Length: 189
Image 1 (cartoon, rainbow, N blue to C red):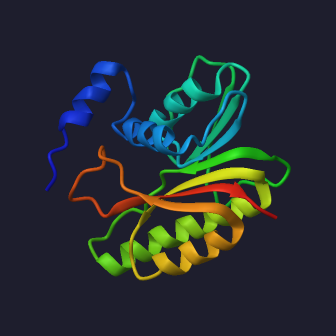
Image 2: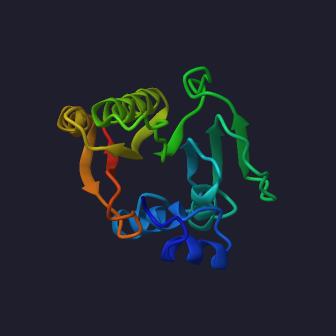
Image 3: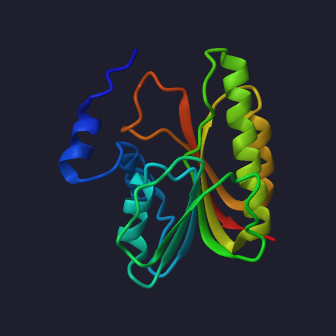
């Protein structure tokens, strides 16, 4: 078992972030510069909203963010945030074009490693499908994945669709966690 109230959990509470995951996205942004002022961002699996808080700092008042999750998300006071309570598999994003798509989605884990890794892969596969349809040319995609046997297959597909594909494990991730992030920059047609 991990220690829930670890350093990053406490730091998030002290600094007003809704989750410790905020620091993961801060590290990703620092290393890869995925957001810029004025970007339109889609956050898949946005609850409780920690990543939205981070994105807002980088996109500024001229940017916009849309978040979707099955869970309730406490409303934001900022007018450039839209939250949808819903299922990514049922929501139609087809009429929108985003500069960046981010996903911190994870499956409900069963404790059966292969099954959990495969469900994580499926979520990433669907996030990529959304990106194929809704991410602007030269846009960026960030996804959390559990590294199972399908990982290299997914990375290979992504390398054919983005100029840069990197694998990154933030220091703010628990050392015992199997999660890692795939950072894809520069969607190419």
